Length: 159
Image (cartoon, rainbow, N blue to C red; front, side, top):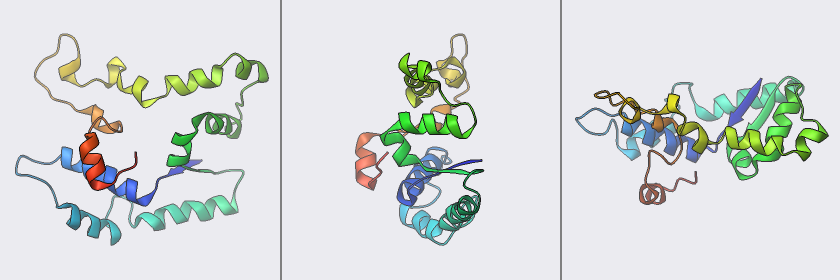
C-alpha cells in the first residue's frame, strides 16, 4: 500500500477551493471560516484528518515493508528520488541502465500534472474537438488550474 499524506493546511485549502468551484448558483457552500471550523472538528469524507493520517502512520510503523508512507509536499519538491523509491517498493526498481538513459526523468515528465491535464481524455467536453454544450470540469482535479495566483496568496496555499 502507498499512502501519500498532505500538509493539513494545504489539504484544507485545496478541498475548500475545489468545493467552491463545484458550488451551486446560489453562492458558496460555506464561508472559509465555517469550512475551516468544520475541517478542524473532523467533518470530512474520511473523518478527522489527523486521525486518518495517524492511522496510516501507525500501520506503516507496524508494517514498513508493506506500506510506503510519503508526504505530498516532499515528493513535489524533489520528485525523482521518490519515483525511484516507489518503483523499488513495488518491486519494479529501475536498472542502472534505465537511470543512465533518463527513464526515471521520462516517467516523472509523463506523470506530471501539466502532461496529464493536457491529455485529450482529461479535457472537458468544451475543450474537445467536435463537442459542444457540456461544461465538464476535470481540470478541477489538477493543482493551480482551479485557483488564480492572487487567490492562492490571499488564503495562504503553498501548492
